[in-house]
Image 1: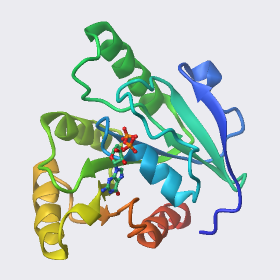
Image 2: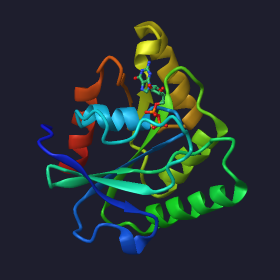
Image 3: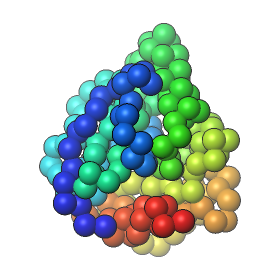
Image 4: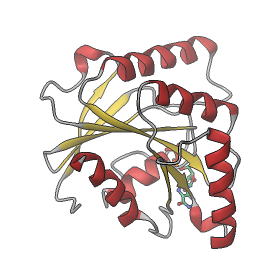
Amino acid sequence: MKVKTSDIAITAVMPSQYPADDLPEIAMIGRSNVGKSSTINTILNRKNLARVSANPGKTRTINFYIINKEFYLVDLPGYGYAKVARSDRAAWGKMIETYLSTRNALQEVLLLVDIRHTPSEDDVLMYNWLRQYGYGSIVIATKSDKISKNQQQKSMKVIRETLGMPTNAQIVPISSLKKLGIDKLWGALESLFIE
Ligand code: GDP
């Protein structure tokens, strides 16, 4: 897909603030610091649209980016940041659950995991949650530049097994730093719209 335009359209915390125009939505979620903001900036070919945060765990809103005036890329706030208060964690859970369970325009939710690490308990819980809502057909393995091709293959096997991904779900390794895997990710995203 050629990204002609991309802009932040809406920052929401509750359903009344979600976009009202019924365009399809593709969301991304993952642990704080997994590389979600970098991934969004890279696939949109923007430097600073999504903030690459020095304060992990600070973004507690759902950010809707409008792409080519055709669909929304939805940036869901990250989880797993130890210093977040319990009450904030509960608010985060409610916000995400409300979005996932009520949003008709939502086509797919992509989980991001760090290619170097075995998915955490939180990642597994999140993936199971996504599967329950019918999502989880694409997992992004970030920071692929940090390990060799050979290690990437091994890591992807561990990620697939740990998350319990079905065979028809795919893992796409990407590096925002080296701009690797971006076309493959776009190919996977486009196939969501064609199906
Ligand atoms: P977020 O909290 O998930 O939005 O993660 P960020 O995009 O803010 O990235 C967290 C950290 O990982 C930052 O220091 C980034 O520079 C780094 N990072 C993100 N993507 C990559 C990548 O592809 N390769 C490498 N080596 N570092 C990355």
